[in-house]
Length: 443
Image (cartoon, rainbow, N blue to C red; front, side):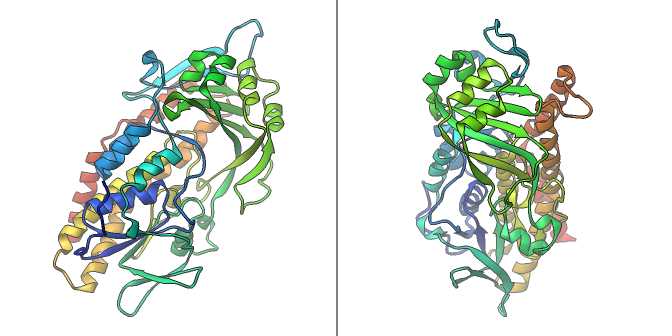
């Protein structure tokens, strides 16, 4: 249940720019800790692009740290592999390219699993659950940020495209891959101000599960599967409580993306079919079940020019705004929530320190220390993900220089990197960050 209003006795107030997964999880976590927060979203309402997204154990832990309500909402809408025998599998990996028409299905390669397996949600459904936890007074729509500057009273003044202004003690950019807040931190012309094209793109679709079962068989339709092959790969997993199969089909080429201001372009099902015309039977059947009119999604990230800093004074970036990653690890959204958990715990400690304080300079310096601490806690792990995810996309397509199409080598690398993501204690991560904050404040 959402609090009815913003906290009235918070010694500082936070502006969150952007109301996606990062912005909402952070705002909910701050409200839970008694911190006044306002969300400024440039769209007319909250909304998530894309369809299915998977969450691994670390993400679920981070949700629980942020707020029990977030985890409970996730639990209500998540879908696991439908077969009990596959509940703990992340993906089953198969050879989607080399095929023998006499074989009923693709060659099995290996499995990757963890304690909870694949936990997928439809983005819109997860978003609906989080919106329930946000008081109406917290949300401000049609707010396209232009600038942030400090005013004479020590507050940060935000100016928006519509001519309006707002004030806060700190500004947190959760405004995604095209982050305006990132540009304000590093400068509009800095190489890391804008994301870079990775020369991968994908077709996305949702297929009714019964149609998928009829086409490719129940086992593959009902459980997460990754089809590997040269220059392409396809992943599928169930969403909507098993009523729908989510499809993401990735392709790689050397061409540049035609328009960097738009990360999608229209396409037809025939385009997707042509991309996989020399692949096996099941990949072609999956493409044939997509709707006639599709969008192609360009895969951009911050891998070529990682941010040198996540903050500038009392302005900081979180999630994709700080470390936009390709989706090949299935961990980008989870790392956004890790960011939210760590930053919320640090700001919770700030809230405790500043209770009863009216000294504006102390508020400002303590918040700056909080953001230095957050960067120290998150930068190495989150930037590692960006680079590892790039490599993972190449591993799936037998394009990695070290592994090529050696399945055993690919499996070993993937086991190592995925378990690095999964096998953490987010609670300990947060406790360490708060301890570091206390140490820095005392120095």
